[in-house]
Length: 314
Image (cartoon, rainbow, N blue to C red; front, side, top):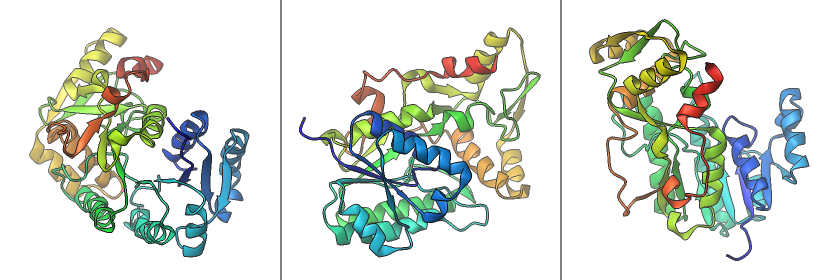
């Protein structure tokens, strides 16, 4: 293994970005974070930015809307990882700003690998309804643009963030697993995948200099973290020593609920439908022609299991 690649993370102070920055710094990669002036002066983010500095991260000032600042930052590194946000509540999308990033990478001409802001379901293999369908289509459009420009890439399909999705068991209004009744979308049998955020950071950084992940989709499907809603409820019942009442919601009811809900709950429910009813995270085989699986590539990573993760809620 030669010298470790220099990594630039865009969106590093965001929800998943901070875990990627931490993993990069921890693994000894020269790590750079692109931050906007407005972020630096945000008191909430100031603490995080201080912790970045203490870990040896170099802060570069710039913005996706400032082409020169982007090109200048990109020219200092080998790898660009984007962790910019999801679709915002008003329907506008920071994801689309990534087309500006593609233009800057193309102009800089020195990037060995680009990780666009994916970190979810595989957008080329989903059966989602609106409004999730449009959000996925945007990410797919971005993939096509990266391929067309011939930019070397890795697309990270990390499936569900454990911290964000595991506590509510497919009921977005809950902040902890249910104690009385479990509402189960569909028949509760398709399996979802839950990956702890720090493990997503670790796996992503391990893939940076790995030739096996070049121009491939890096899937995260740790075997102990694949659960159906029925399986999840059973595991939880064992932990709390209590049987929950299971209420099954047929698909037509789920679809009706999606239609009638306001944004942003509408998007969350549409993604839940894709994952828990359609089984979009696990209903296909990973073929070597397009993808590799993280826990197989990096068996040395001791990932947090769903079982362990749920202990904090008991």
